[in-house]
Image (cartoon, rainbow, N blue to C red; front, side):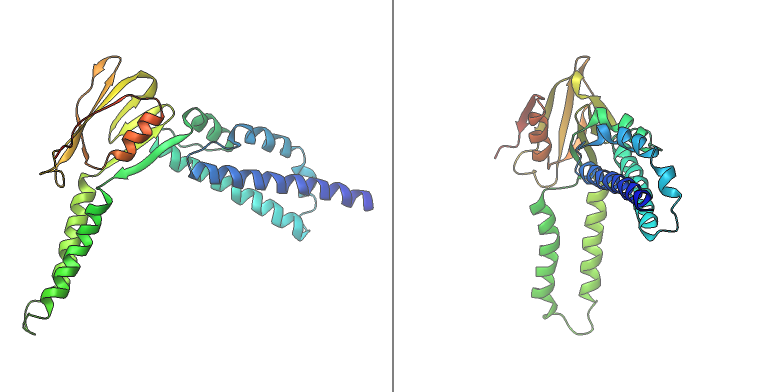
Amino acid sequence: MGSARIRLEGRLEQVEAAVAAVKSVRACLRGGFPGLLWRLPELLTSLELHLPHVRRHRGSKEVQAALRALRLETNGLVADGGRLAKSLGLPAPRSVQEVREFLAPHLPVKMNTRVIAKPFQLAILVVVPVVWLVVFSSRLPSRATPVVPMVIMFVAGQVLFLRARSVRVVLSSSVLRLGQSEFLVSEIRAVHVELPGWMNRRGELATVVVETRFGPQAPIKVPNALEPLMKALRESGVRVIQTGGLW
């Protein structure tokens, strides 16, 4: 019994090590990095040799907890990989092996966000109606049209407007996605960004033209909050040519 217990503990340690590795990979994927993804299928394949022996002791609470944690983390990894694959325009993986096969060539992901507006514009959107409410609400007659619902409706309308014209932007090691348009990073020669002038900078959209080896592609309208994208492109070795945006 003593040697059997020692063997079981050794196998449980391998299960727990696999759980820790999967957790680490999940955390990396959420940040757009591969981490130990490349060796995870090999680790889990090796683990399969020990699982039949571990499952023979299902009555043990330690074994139940270890198997439950392994199942939870591997299912979570496939779900996390599916969300990232969707943003990259890839098929949804159905296993840990497919997570590695589908995602590894595209990692790291430098940017994965929805471009809506500049932070100060969003702040103004909230602050201005609130200030207006504080300043003028005390001057209105008690039976006047309720101010708070009007302000809420105004802010909600602006948020919906900004959301409707926002653009999903994804930049991985292999692909640049701007809304519905997708470009291979290896084929991009330059990205031309035309920013609106100062007087109309707040409301106008920027124009992005991706120049590939096939020539300039169709212009894409994007909200004027492209500084993070331009920085990420330059860090990826992509030439960015910026025009406009002057006083």
